[in-house]
Length: 165
Image 1 (tube, helix red, strand yellow):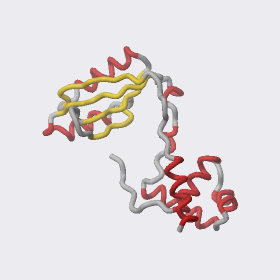
Image 2 (tube, helix red, strand yellow):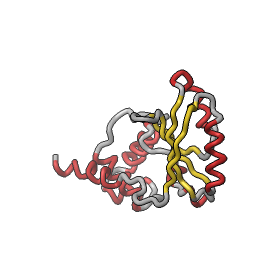
Image 3 (tube, one colour):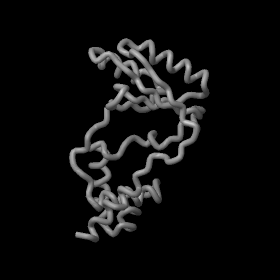
Image 4 (tube, one colour):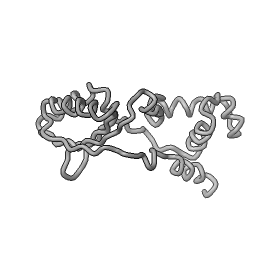
């Protein structure tokens, strides 16, 4: 489950995040010099962003293909509404299930799954089907990632708000 941030980010938060995108290993001192703000301000902002859940774990930046998981699929899952807890726990126990969303429409959940190939995807799908409460699945295999997750445009818009106000 995603942790909701305790407050909305402001333009300085956006500028810090964009600077880290350009130089991920930058220290708080280097960021403070680049942005023209005090080192303690940068350090406090980064700590708050981490505590609030706005900055997610470093492992989320990893390309699954670097771990040998070159196939990505999206599974639409229909579940028994009385078994949501066992479904959530069961999916969390499968490492190849890397993301799950509750959805509207024909399916109740959408799971993003990585696999080493189609035979591995078959194994994972069967493992998912064994979870108590999963009634049905439908699988769509990603053949090419046309646009990876991106937030830089949203962050740029946020960081520019300071100059407009």
